[in-house]
Length: 201
Ligand SMILES: Nc1ncnc2c1ncn2[C@@H]1O[C@H](COP(=O)(O)OP(=O)(O)OP(=O)(O)O)[C@@H](O)[C@H]1O
Image (tube, rainbow, N blue to C red; front, side):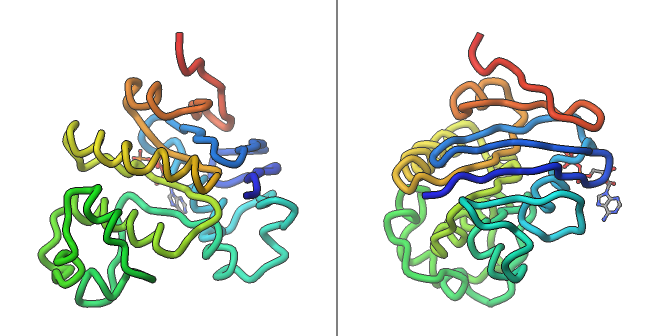
């Protein structure tokens, strides 16, 4: 699997952002509300105009069509959009193990999207993304709507999968405890730049 590289990314207040995320590495991003965490992920997934570029392995963002880039470098936004009636229609392939690991069952695929709670949507958006076999992941507070037990359950499912598939991951997170559990490295947004914070003190 390839690493993800950010080169001179500029979006909103953020300027000249350089970052290398190795295959299988989770880099956590934090910062105050409105500091630009989501916009940075959107720039890396090429969903928003920006300066600089990103690379996945040797391939530069601008060298492939936007939709193809986003099929490889997949963002899971804090609030996911759903376009079909049922959950299963959004899955690229059946994901029975993932559904079970996250507390769902095969039956969940037949659920109507309209009945989903915000926490269910958040977990199922991740399953949907993983069903498309991305090569890098950009996660915008994927556990924001989850209680502690469900958060741990999601981490226990997702972390081994990230290691096994050797996915480079940018993960926006707030809690210090969670960052300690997950992160290979942690950067806090401060004004226009990223400041590296110690992960374990
Ligand atoms: N398309 C846009 N054009 C101009 N400004 C924008 C645009 N999208 C977002 N912003 C602004 O950019 C700033 C950063 O937004 P962003 O959503 O990245 O914040 P965030 O760090 O993810 O915040 P939160 O933790 O509250 O989700 C905010 O002030 C927001 O209003």
